[in-house]
Image (cartoon, rainbow, N blue to C red; front, side, top):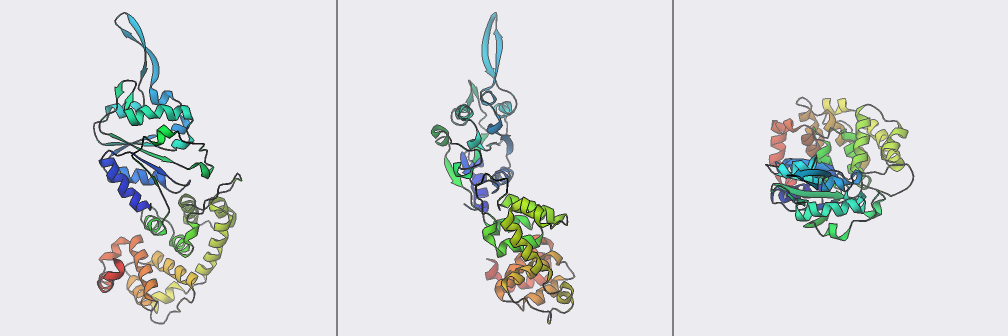
Length: 334
């Protein structure tokens, strides 16, 4: 399931109190998507990490209480458990990395998820449970999930990567990723998620590690060793080559000043690099010239660049240039 699809599903499930367990490779964005879905559903969010908890965290704290003259032993809810008991508005309880939790902790979770009780204390009717986990094949500390725990969920869905969805996030103000990185991943989409479980101290390409590369680039750092440490040697090697293409592409000033005669890209990599540069430098003054230049490219590249420009600079969607282009290219935008 793609990120945009999963976000809609989770927002729906939160509103309708349906329990969903999301599985996927490390760094694919499960936690961020669940957080976004809670925001979309206008729900409060309670985050739990059973991997660093013990059974007491989900049963309550053992305590002695007085009932008249008699001392009784009881488990008393505390911390996040109290929030779940006292919730007065829609609340998503996000249980992250369930598969990394010891079986004793998973067993303690069962009464929380299914029975909605903590030793006789009832969970608020406003609470819905959402979970996330890696699979055992990912070497992320996941041994197994107890069968009774799996069956407590209304559905289990798998999150897959989508370059188009990542691009929308990356070029938004929230993502703030450099357009050259976005263009590279459009050029080499398989490098957005190429997770390989290994015992070596290296990273694999994923949405999370790609974002780390983007953060380094935003600081002006393009050192190969640092980028390799962020997203893996193969990612860094190919991206370094793409950067050279980006640096040798047609001059932006020549495109801005002479859009009808500026040099056109000749190969796919340079096309992607040009689209990235125009996305980065587009503003009210340059946009008309950039559009004139883009009209000289094949429609696929023109559409790709115009979409990217508007994703990064939404205010340009109100300009006459874009309005006229959108009217003439409504089918391409559908």
